[in-house]
Structure formats: C-alpha cells, structure tokens
Length: 460
Image (cartoon, rainbow, N blue to C red):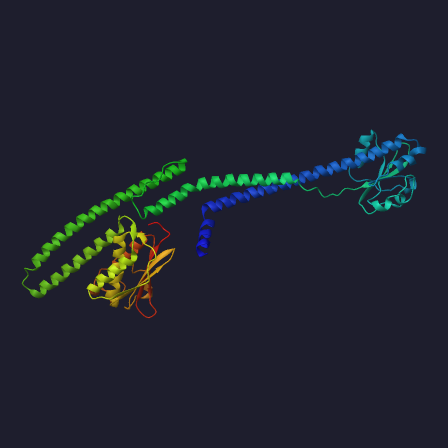
C-alpha cells in the first residue's frame, strides 16, 4: 500500500499529469460552455416557436369567427372548443382594460392582414369566461387548473371575443440524449488525443531524466538518440556532448592516478632505503613513521579516487557469502564479527566496491569499538546492511559531516587511531554509486550504527 501511494504521488506530481489535467479541465469547460450555449439557443428557439404556435391558434379562431355571420358565431365558437382552447363571445362591458404585452397584437394583425384591437384578459379564467356567453364552458373546470393565456379580440364588425388557450411551460425542453452522447464521445476522443499528444511531448524529458540518472552510475551508457523535434534534438546533443566531456575527464584522471601512484611510490621507496642509513636511531624511527603516514595517506587518497570512478561491471552478489567471508577474514586476525539476518535473494551490484564499503565499515567498528555486529534487513524495496559498534560514537552535530573527504570530527577518531578521514567518504560514494545511501546514527546504549541502504527497485 505505501508503494502504491508513493507511485501515485510521483505520478500526480509529474509534468505529464499536470499538463493532462490542465488540458482535460479546458476541454471539459469548453464542452460545458457548448452545452450551456446550445441549451440557451434551444430555449430561445422553442420559446419563439411556442409563441408563434399560440398566435396561429388565435388567428385561426378569429378568421373562422369573422367568416361566420353574427347569428352563427355562437355555434362556431362552440365548435372551436377543445380541451386546451376556449372561445367565448363577450359584451363590451366584459372587455378587459389591459393592453397586451409583447408583440402579440402586431403578430396577429400581420397574420390577419389588418390590425385588430386586442386586450389582455390575464392568466386566469375571468368572470366572463365562467359564464356561458356564446360558446359555453362545459370543460371550464378542467382548464381552470392549468395555466392559461387569455386575450380579448375585437372582430372586424365590432364583436368582442375572448380566446383562452393553455399556456405551455416556460421551461425549455431537455437536450436530446443523442446530443449529450455525441458531446461526451467528442470529449472522450479529444481527451484521448490530447493525452497521446502530452505523452509524446513529455517522453523526451523522461528519456533525458533516465539518461542523466544512468550517467551517474555508468559513464559508458549509450548516448541519447538525437531524434524528434528541434528542441529535443538540441537537448539530446547537448547531453551527449556533456557525457563525452565527463567521460574524457574521468579517463584522464584515471591515467593521472596511475601515473601518480607510480611516481609517488618510487621516491617513497628510495626514502625508506635512505632512512635505514641514518645512524641516529630515534631520528630514523621518526622518519620511518612519517614515511608510513605519507604512504597511508597516498593509499587512502588513491583508493578514494578510484572509488569515485569505479567502472566495475554489475553482477549478482551473494551478500550472505560476502559477509561470511569478511567475518572469517576478521576471525583470522583475532577480531569478532557477528552476522544476524539473511538476504533473501542475490543483490545486483559491484562486488569489489561493496566489499570495500563493508570492509571500511567493519574496520571502523573494530577500530573504535573493538568489535562489529552486522544485521541484515531485506525486503522487496531495499537491502539494508547495518553495522554497529560499542565505541564512543560521534557527536550529533558532526554526523552530517563525517562523510566529507578528509573530515575528522574529534580526538576520539584522530590520526592516532589510523586513517586520514576517507573511509566513510568511500562508503558513502559507493552507496550513491548503487543508487542508495549511508545512514549514520548514535546508538542509545552507546556506539555508532552505520546503515548501508541498497535499493532493489533501482537498477544499478
């Protein structure tokens, strides 16, 4: 579960996820805006169509009534009755005084060919409608429960007629299912295309990051492919040039190390021989001690520099056998090393480098604590090799600095105990070479706890 959570956090913080989220949010907003605009346009069109339909019904009723003689209008009005339409002949004193709102009067006049006087009778069934009038109201009670639009219209011979029709709802109809489905399909297709485009755009960055990570462990890694857009090609070319320069510098340093190793050891050997010719024994011993110290410093420095440019091939290592071998070597020298735990599977790493790192940790534990206790903790994520001693430990303020080259924290770990301050630096560099780290902490019961963390999920 923690691994899945970490993977999700890494994915959500990636450039791909952020660009994809921005594009998806923009597409979703545009689709919602499109739906809203279509809804508004549809509502306006439907409202206009309903108004025209209502006007057409009024015009048709007026035409039919004006086509009849005054004596037959009552019968014609009765014939026009329907469940959603009521036509009633009214007298002058029943005519509403309200002027109709909107363009209903102009629309009806345009349809009839001449203006008609129209009054708005309100939204309900007025007192005149409740009376029989000329048209009767056999179904008036049913219509009274429904919203109505009612107008009083003056016919061309002066007769007033009240026409009431069911008022359709102002709520626009829902968008068709097909339209919504098409919009969703469009959103899905465009989102998929956008995801592919974002993936293609961010893939060179991922390749560059992987190449940089690989370069930190292997200078002989193949160069980046110089393909793709112009910007990607330029970045790949710059990276390849940087890799070539770094490799050239490291190779030159390796050659310099070989030369220095030879050139320094030769005069030291001559000095040793000449020291033996010194008659003053105390002086001879002091000179020999200085020469031994110089040789130790040279060996430690060359060993440290070799560790920084280790080009050893990666292979499967039996950590259990390696630790048993180191323990047996210490036993020959009369030192006690205990090993607890077991590595479940071989570890892919550099054997000589790991042996050097573990040997340095063991030597430190023996040197300052007169013994070493090694514990193995292994899981799917990492292999942890813990070396503990019962020595004086390190001041908490110095823990972060003791892995710096040539740094010596205090008198308890001074030159009198041997070394020049490069042992932990070498271990830290070897851990980084394998994508891991060296963790140092003081034990609660006294002594130092050094943990070499070697990840199993990162290719060395």
